[in-house]
Image (cartoon, rainbow, N blue to C red):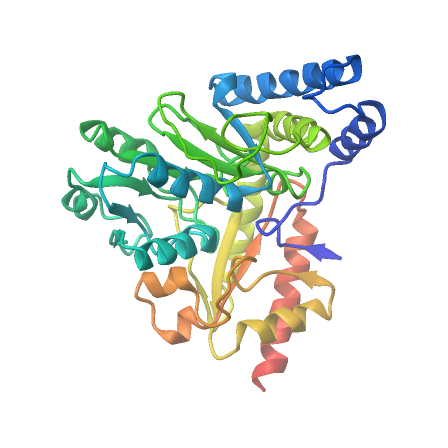
Length: 373
């Protein structure tokens, strides 16, 4: 088997699974209970929160655990709007966002919010001048991803955050789901930052929202005492502890892991460039973990299933996309249907090998030959 769909989800690190199991079996108390089992569970939860805060250089009270990045994105966006209803009805985002952001924006537009989508340049980065022109005193929220999930464009979120310092009532949310555990993350100029554990070899069902302490949110889930005032429910201690473990392991030797991925990505791009009828969509502004390409004349789903027959697993686009037609990212870049309607995504990690890259390339060539003729 050749797995090349790490941006959809990563296999759980065995050490993380072991931690999850141990906590399930040895820490059975509710962290909110007053008896000793609860006290022990609370100590373990607090230690995990402290570790995440230290790893991301934020305060412990700024860490909010969720069921994943989709919930974290919704909590960030809707939580801000409901908490500050008098700050304005204007929101700025992009057409390159994950569906959990775009669908949220569609809903908000229906109930009266004004959504502006900042222009994207040919290189995949937002048009900073257009972004500045969109900002007004009524802009309550800016929500722009860190790394695009389809093509891999890495936005200059620190620069965007610097611009927003001149708009103190505008809150800046960043979806960092495809960034954490892959590239260095700096949160100095960011108010809200979302991510999910299963993208960096953690477990599904666990995510985080980093909420700076000067920002308030209206909870989406109301109830009693929990890990935080902003998200009620019994703390999922095994998931919380395993997320902390996964993040620590992911950030160990991050530079070395990045160089491994870059070398593999460069090899893949080099080999892809030799194949007639294949257009490389990822560029120098993309993280190396994602390589997006278009196979002219062959439907993405057809290619996906042809490779699947060889036990090679890729994706056509982000796994959470509701739309099965053209790539939203490539459409936003004004690519024609021959490119936006025929793209596939290969996503790799430091666990990927050169042999797997070569196996993919050879089978891709064969599939193109067989499907076209």
